[in-house]
Amino acid sequence: QVQLVESGGGSVQAGGSLRLSCAASGRTFSTYTMGWFRQAPGKERELVAAINWGSTSTIYADSVKGRFTISRDNAKNTVFLRMNNLKLEDTAVYYCAADRTSIPASITAMTTDYWGQGTQVTVSS
Image 1: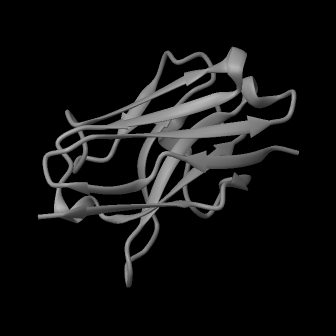
Image 2: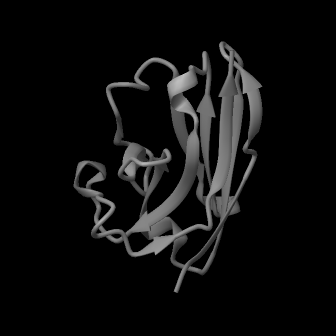
């Protein structure tokens, strides 16, 4: 069992930055691929970024490449999402996810094993 708690969301102007954190409980955190998803009103939940247990493999949605960075600290059971140059279209609820797959490209909203409660990110002009 893994419990996930996100923090770091908020309101920011376009071009600004935020760092999301996801604290996980459970002794097996380091064995999971971790991901960040987001869901905007009226849209499906989409994968933003994912990272494997050893931080040797990451993937990003095309819309955030070059602006967002995912990282993890297994000693602290925490995964991060650094978001730079935020755009209006980044506004969404961001969810942390844990998946037993070892391949970040395989993580999906349908197969993810555990979810956090979500944190709101609002980007304004």
